[in-house]
Length: 314
Image 1 (cartoon, rainbow, N blue to C red):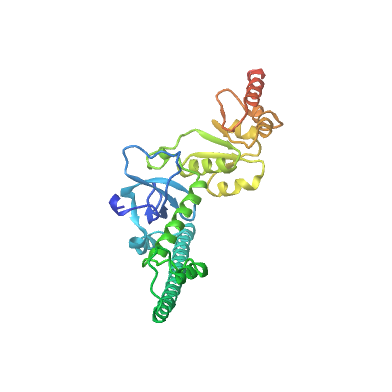
Image 2 (cartoon, rainbow, N blue to C red):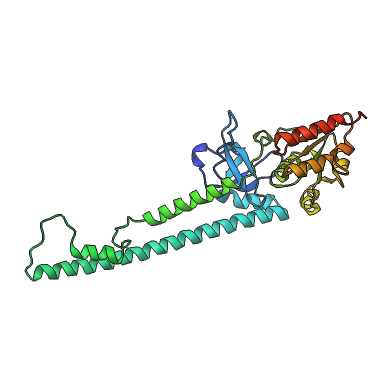
């Protein structure tokens, strides 16, 4: 993809982003989570991809304007998921235009109300002076002005042209970015440059919750061989469609994979996974590696470790 100058891009822009060996994909520049560091030495932006809801750091020279290159990209890239992503962008654009139009209509209505109130105030002041009452010299507001504020405080304020739509749009953009930041499953920044060579080791993954599913998705995207298992089997289906293998039990996954990772929701589930029937300890063998990434209390971690070392060496 041709290079794009950094100065021409900003948060909120719609773009085509090229990630590794994958085709250009429609996305939006968003603010990264506060705890996610930007890759060093690279001019890049944090992109939210439509359709997949993935996020990644993309180098500037791998970004193109969505609107300028839309026809070109649609012509050379096909597929159901790609079309769904494009549809999602177009729906986003329609909703944005609709919101902008609505706010401008509201601004026009407020302006017309302001003019009507100004007109009635001028007439009232003119009639008062005509009856011979001298204007007051103190700093208190005119009675008609006070009445206007009581009746309609918004209309009493003289809006600058375009100020309403600009403020509303800024608030809308900020709200969207904050909502996106709270739901981000950020990709590992080292996995976004397209230079990773998949390992020849078989990787097993136990537990496909919010964190686990994001990790497995990235492993599959990078071309790794992954076998998955989850207590509720239907959570495995999306990953099987992307090429993952299915393990019937934790013991089977551990015994057939070189490295097995787990990410479980609570201490009891973690103990059952390792110590229960057909658990990890039933399938572990010399040369196999098991890594528990669950958030556990020290007592649970110690108990699991002690059970492992109490096993006879096989």
